[in-house]
Amino acid sequence: MKEKDFISIIQTTLNSKYIGDDCAYLKDLGIVVTQDNLVEDVHFSGNYADPYQIGYKAVMVNISDICASGGIPKYLTIGLSLPDNINENFIKEFYRGAKSAAGRVEIVGGDITGGSKIFISVTAIGSALDRNISSRRNAVVGQKIVISGEHGSSGAGLNLLSGKQYNCLTDEEKKQLINAHLMPSAQLEFSGKIQKCVYGKYAMMDTSDGLADALAAIAYESSVLIEVDFNKIPHSKSIEKLPDYHNLVLYGGEDYGLVASVDSPGDLLVIGEVRAGEGVKINYDGYSEFLTKKDVEEKIFKHFKE
Image (cartoon, rainbow, N blue to C red):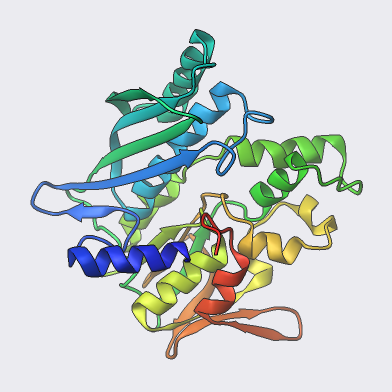
């Protein structure tokens, strides 16, 4: 089964209005809440990521979800399941990385248990007070599609870590792409700018599962067509040397940029527009490609074997 099929079953079983976006907006408490799990050999590997980098990324991906909601990241809890061969240095370096990523966001607790592999579960809480909170269901025809972050770098970095050669790249370019995968940055500044240019409903997601996935999720949850210009999507010039760079930009994932639909974009980077219809249309030089939900799901990273 696909991950989205599991989510659909959970939504139906619980009949909860909160499930669907990456963050649950608890209006009565004035907070947004998110949780992410990272599993060894699925989301990271000790063969190429050290404990500091693992802790850093585990925290940053949750802060990214809070940013995508439009909230202000405030608190974190961290749960760890660790095998017997983990030593004190791993714990110290993991939490040094987590603290570095957290910045002003405070780590306030968590849990530690034993396990056969490293399993990390992070919960992030953000303030929604005086904030206009997003939902992927809120895109409206006529809004502009704005974006932050570079796309495709993390996917290329993961390919390098997994053994792909990319001999056309310099050592410095390879280093930058690998760092983009291991040490992503949440788009705090962009999320803050969104608050200054939106007054009504808007949609926003991070691109953790790929830019195309975020565009498709917003398009189908909002029942609209999202049309974008590929050439306007920000990406590292170095990946243009790669034969699969179009796919990396759209489907690479784990770039942790933000994409949103807004009425007045101000000085934000516009890559497209929300139109009547349903789906995603990508315009290239001289031709266009229409993507359905199924098209996107077949190309993005899958956490579950089918």
